Length: 159
Image (cartoon, rainbow, N blue to C red):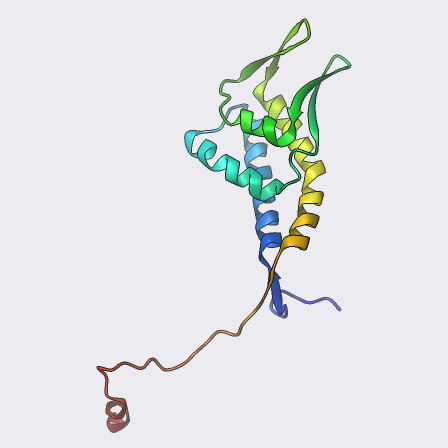
């Protein structure tokens, strides 16, 4: 039986937060790829929390590689590399690997991260379901507000 959001009796808050954070992170990286730029100061400040909420504990289970002329250049574990990206600025970056020094557009590094996130997101969602506490949906409460200063009979006398 399929339930609409109005019919749902429970919410899984961590699950919803994880999905929302993954959407926000994907949108942010898409913007950085299109603009070929680093994070602004405000984005940098919020980036670690956004990463943690989107990846949960799955971020350091995968390694990130940049492919350069059939060579896989290791960039580190996904979460760790993403945290390093938060302070990188400028449209081009240099990567040193073995005896090579590779110049790449920052948008390519964001794309590598986004591709890695797409592999991690399903595991993070699965983890969020396991750790998420269910809370019941409640009907909107309505009622009369009582106050020591107001006279309950005053409203009756007016009618």
